[in-house]
Image 1 (cartoon, helix red, strand yellow):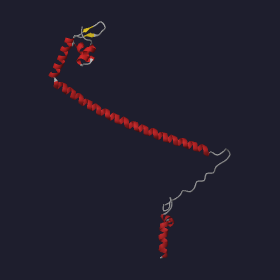
Image 2: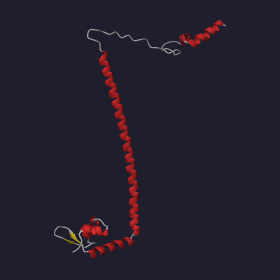
Image 3: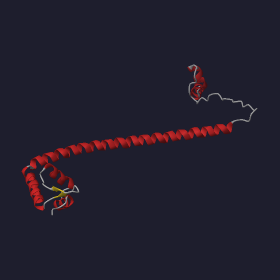
Image 4: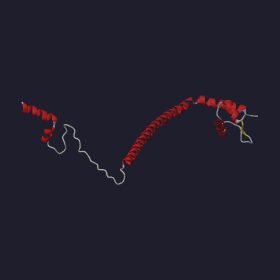
Length: 167
């Protein structure tokens, strides 16, 4: 009686799928049982393992080239993945910032609505709104005035002029 696929995989250290492919391709002979499992002769398994080892020794360069191509491709893919993850993090932060800003504006709008409701006057009363004239900072030129009239109102100019008149 031979080994099952699981036992052969455990014995050789290979996966069941590797052994199954070897059987399907004819590189490893096995008998198929009624329950669709395989019966693998231990001597046949040892022959197959030796052949695989011999093939690896024959073509170490091809194997290394394929691995180096895969390694290069893996590094490229890893770099692309890292870049995509950085972009994802950036856009996630942007989204969070926009949500925070939106919530701030929403709270401000709600506060304004609440304060407007409190300021409403009872029915029948009218409120007169008096707007103060625009405040002009000292030493600034008011709109629509000439330089001469502005200089007359300028404290520094007035002080110099008075000093000149006194002399």
